Amino acid sequence: MAVEKLEKLKKERNAIILAHNYQRPEIQDVADFVGDSLALAMKAKETDADVIIFCGVDFMAESAKIINPDKVVLFPDATAKCPMAAMVDAEGVVKLKEKYGYDVVSYVNTSAAVKAVSDICCTSANAVKVVESMPNGVIFVPDENLGLYVKRFVKDKDIILWPGFCPTHLGITKKDVLELKKKHPNAIILAHPECHPDVIDIADKIASTEGMVRYAKESDAKEFIVATEKGLCYRMKKEMPDKEFYPIENAVCPTMKKITLEKVIRSLEKMEPEIKLSEEIIEKARKPLERMLKVGRSS
Ligand code: 13P
Ligand code: SF4
Image (cartoon, rainbow, N blue to C red; front, side):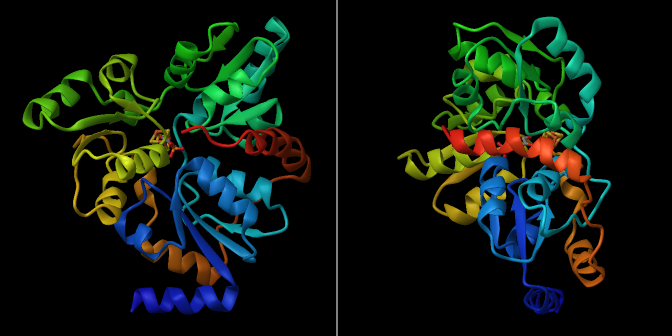
């Protein structure tokens, strides 16, 4: 019933549902497109729908609006704010910029205001490629672990890190991963670059959530330990039923789970909550996002 109601509303409004890989199964099942932050930003750019219902967290929905200022972007739960994005503010970034004179690379996990003072954005799927594309040293905000991961590859640039982190990924320990490996010795260890360096050190493949899906599809291996938010395993199992995916049981992002089917339907019925940003912020934040989209994906 609920799904039929949603489909009807979607047609009436010419709406598309974009959902992140960590969303609840019920949301992934009704979405028109499920992906990582980069894929969702790309999809938002190319859609000809009038309304985008964004199922993810605040910074992702804001990015969709910045890329598509003329479209209505609905965000079914306005309280779904990524705690990492809240760890950095525009004022602090500007101070660092003045101190070092470097360009600012901001992870998309930032507010529109932080993007507006950034030179380029990146996601976990292209952070290394983006930093490599910069001419000089960079200030990298806000995820310290992603920045440390980039530093493993980019040796010829000074990279100033911001001390931000993802509580969900930081909660994944080397011990958790090794315990799973003991139980499933043939499993390949996949890890997200937001994880602690101890976890990165023991992983077989480090990638964005989309990169993990692609890697598992192309691999001959049948078992995978998935060191990221647990929700990704739902998509992986759905798309690769013949393979096994072992999640880290406590790796749940409560913010990502705030969006429910009921909230999506209500939001489309009432056409709210809607993402609203000032023209000035949109104009300024669009440049670093568009610049990132030109760099594209590396994993
Ligand atoms: P991805 O872009 O890899 O999906 O990651 C987004 C995110 O919020 C990770 O915590
Ligand atoms: Fe933010 Fe971490 Fe949740 Fe991703 S998993 S949305 S970085 S809190």
